[in-house]
Length: 67
Image (cartoon, rainbow, N blue to C red; front, side, top):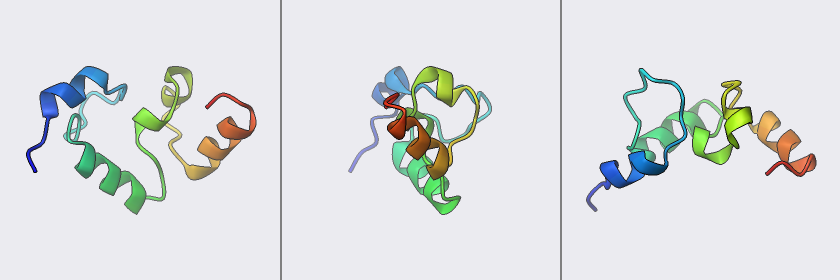
């Protein structure tokens, strides 16, 4: 399967500029899951900006109805 990096970059909301995985969703997801976290695209902009990508933060946002 061919990666659609340019298409992915158009909707990537990751604000961590030096990230080498931007637009490479399969690599990004694998990296974050290994760290027991989720990628930026799972979070609304204000939550993503905190760089807290933990499952706990995600669950808290779901409970608050923000996701």
